[in-house]
Length: 619
Image (cartoon, rainbow, N blue to C red; front, top):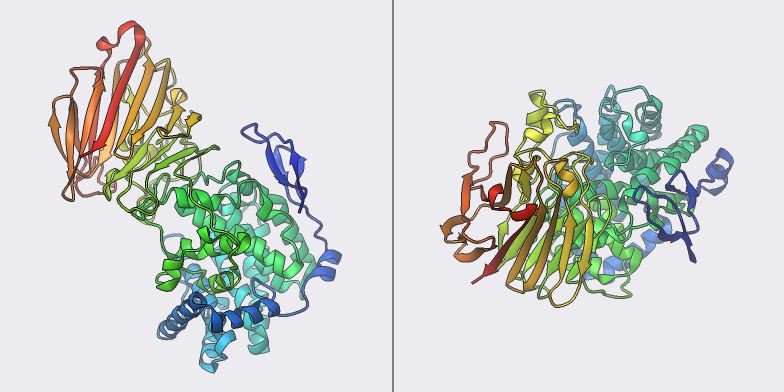
């Protein structure tokens, strides 16, 4: 589709190229929304299946099963998974705290695997199990409306099963399932005064997951209640741009790479199901930065395979990300997005493994682009990455970020970075910690006000990240640190203005990272103090052994060494703060964790202007 420039006022006052499916409304791109009862009746596919899989797509998939080694291998994995599911008990309505989410997600995985295997093999045993699983979850008293993610994922699971194998199921099971989708899924979504219903208008992953689940459910019950289906789909198309805009302009997902997988998976479900059932996704996949977001995922995946785990993010890229990337590979024809090693030896594919086989079968390579060695993206949580040799697991890898704390799953981590060299992660981020133990004791983890308890946790506060703290004060939650300059070339560099994080505790602070060569990075902090400035502490988080030396330290880990050199000011030393055990009993424990600190005496800062230069270099 021919694109044109649409000038819109976004939250960050930028303009982006986009499809003509978008219009300018209230600073947010809007999707084309023709959904009415009559439109739905006229355009919805009359053939089955119609969610992600269609008769035509299935025909091509079966051809690929005979000719494509990756498709064959992944289907073999699904077969093994289906056999294991048959050995498990049926799901029960068992909450973990206030969440049913684990059960809902397990149902998504079971239905995707079992239904796909049934469509290929037509096993009566598998069909019987699908029927039993559906009857079990549809007999639950509810799908837990106090935590709507649970409803959304359960609704997708049930909708997928009815769409993919409903014609083979007993009529009473189909009737029960559709009734449950309406009464336990869709209708509770209109209880806007209920618990945690913020997702309807929110901009975080809940918006995508919940509306995506409701779209799938609505497409399946449209034959029995077209009015409710049209109303729900129309609402979703109206509200999804709230979360889609977070990808703009460059695809960086502000909640980090783990939540990229969660939010994006259901944006893909929304796009995919609308396309196969109605012939259009109404612009979802054309949303600014959405397709580009897969590049973000690849960039924040280090040579070691671990993430740049900012925000509430897990450490490692896994099979579920590879499965989701297959949709992007199919959509673009770009072989860069197809994780061949994973599909050659799949394991832990996650709950979208069933749809993943469809996406994998749809991939037809048109090109293989290369991942830029130097990359940056703007947005609410701007990120920059510098790499060195292609496909070398021991290569130089530096990832830095700006941003702010007052974001969904955000941390006080603007200005932080991670660094890998020689296959060792020398500078780490403490990452996420499990929610349930904190919820269980009544800890307010979700509050993001300036004085909220969240910021007392080591994983969340600025003292737990490799950035600079002034007067031992918390960062300002609304202070924003933008990337102000990026230079490519043999010595790439990126600059971040982190001044706003400090309120009135100093006048300015600008942080710059320079990749000097494939073995060395220079970190330069220029600052201007004021009368309120009392202490300035530079921090670096590591699990390496640290040996202080004159004007720096030697870090040792896995038989390798890294030199930390303080170039400016002179005659200054490091301090080492042990964080194992961590400061609070409820903090995440990381073995051998410590913070290397460089304390800058204010009296050494002449004429209010100071410069701190630190080099990290390999042997």
